[in-house]
Image (cartoon, rainbow, N blue to C red; front, top):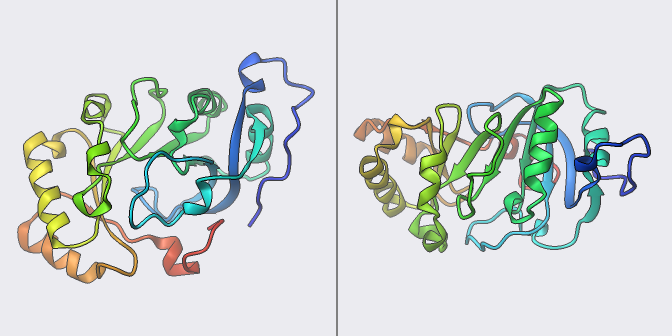
Length: 231
C-alpha cells in the first residue's frame, strides 16, 4: 500500500487547472474489486468528505481528515504506478467541486478513468470520457431520499448503476426501480450484497430465480485482504 506522500505543488506545472487543490484521504495501488473492471490493476484516488451516511458504509474514515494536494501533485503520484486504470472515489468525490477538473486532467493523460459516486449529486458536469459508476441508494441504506433521479439522464452505455443490497426487501425494491426506469436499456447494472450482512449465494439464487438482467458483484478486495483501508 502506498498512501499520499506530498502536498506541494509541482514546480513544473504551468497549466492553471492542475494548480487546483483537493482534500485527499489516500492514493493507493490495488486490484479493482468492483464493477466490470474487477481484477484489473488500478490506482485509486480517494477524496475526503461525504454528505451521506449509509448504514453499511465501509469508508467512514474518509469522512474527515486527509491532506490538501494539487491536481499536479496527484497526477505525479498516480504516474508512479504503471497502470492504465484510475478510479476516483470517496467518500463522495463530487462533494468537492474540483473533482471535475481532476477527472478531466486524468482523461487528458490517457488514463481509463472511472468515478464511483453515490448518485446524490449532479453528474451533468462529469467529463464524458469518464466511466460513471453510480449508486442508487436502497431503503436499507438509510439514504434513499438522497437519490438524484435526474442523474439517470446522464448515463451512457459505458457507465454502470450499482445497487448495494441489505436484504430481500432491498432486492425487490431494486427490481421495481429497474423495471420502472428500464435501466437495463441504459447501461450495465450491478447488484452487490452488503459485506457480512447478505450472503452472496443467497442473492445469486434470487437473481437466477427471477432472471434479473444484472451482474452479481462481490467485493474482490475484501475476499483477498479483508475490510481495511488502502485496499
